[in-house]
Length: 274
Image 1: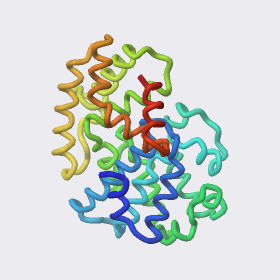
Image 2: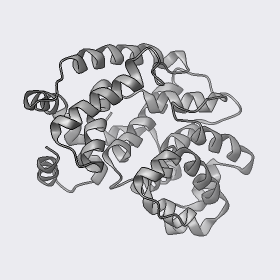
Image 3: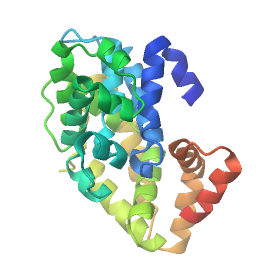
Image 4: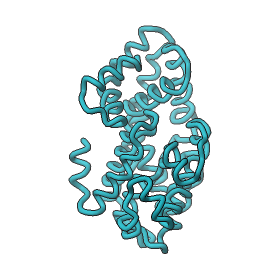
């Protein structure tokens, strides 16, 4: 789903609210930037056509939770809302907990919303105080390594985990390339190890999703991922094979993450990612 198509599903004040949240993700690392957040929102819209809402939630509250689920990874937001200046690696470890606290403080403090160019009135129209706890719980429990207990926890976990296999590969490549000083061949080894341990081993911590509507696509993508990973070795040929395979996805990911003004600028960034 392209960005223009995504926003056809949103309207009025809510559309403006989601766009203002997305702008805060611009420039965040490739694995968790705006591209990923838009994908999770797209998955939530798809899932809402498959699942019955529970706990008195609205479509807008669920989509907003999807938009906010990784906000704890954004250094600028952490600084403004939590007065935290931790490095991205440290933020990643507890970003789910930070994200929940960020949403809570934004709802309760209009000044912090203003600093992030988020309209507090629009936010509180979607989230009455009586629903704040369950939305924060959904953010705090979206990670595969954390138990999901509520319907919203499980739904956001599904939306977050439903990337297709090319997106999984592209996110892993971009994350390693931008965070670590490794050769391309070392990154291949890291990607194979990480994605196998996360999705494919018998004891993988993300071997399934907690709701049935997401499992058919998830299992199909796992098969495609396993098949492709088997073909990779830590050599130049595998680097070229991987980049050829994910090039379109990687290009779109970088373009949308950074909101680059033109495709030529995006290509220049891509050349530095190789």
